[in-house]
Image 1 (tube, rainbow, N blue to C red):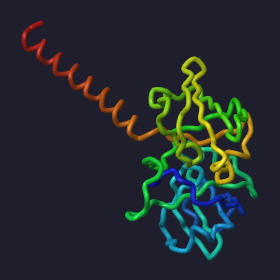
Image 2 (image 1 turned 90 degrees about the horizontal axis):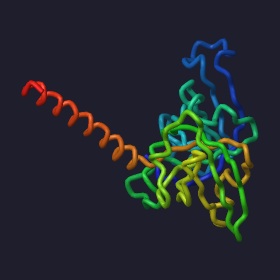
Image 3 (image 1 turned 90 degrees about the vertical axis):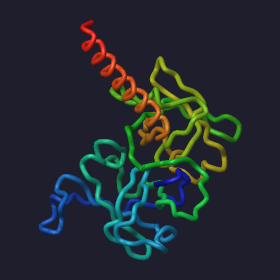
Length: 228
């Protein structure tokens, strides 16, 4: 579990296609191996198998040294996220899994990216920046996105400022303090970001549909028993 408070921005130093390796040690022939450098700030307590959230995706540390760590990107991760579009030299938002003693300053983030969204506008507003994001056409995430609610964008916990149902979009405002701490500031209109909607909404709406289905089945059963 994560909080959506980005700890560090790391640099992609290598991306390796395991299918090009002759070693039999590679188990994921369809994913990629990514190495993140300039990462000493988040590796002081690192262990193999630890979870680190990269641009909002929870990934497992497979190797590390004093300044870099390595993760595997499985095909599902590449399909769901923007990580497959990264190039060597790109910057990535990083957050370690939260500890039992950490302050809970953001919101509950699983690190399970639901989909990507496209930046459709980026407008300065005083010393802040207003962003509008359009969800992928095939996604059904909008019911989980509520004005003044939480959303995770590339791993960062942010507050929703508006929801535009007609264009399947939502907006946020990035304050000056956050602009130097997130990769979002460097992104432009047309770029993709990873989206994870608030888990609370998932459970509430998901539970509602399940309860309705149970009620429908019970009602149907009672009607049959009465011959109606």
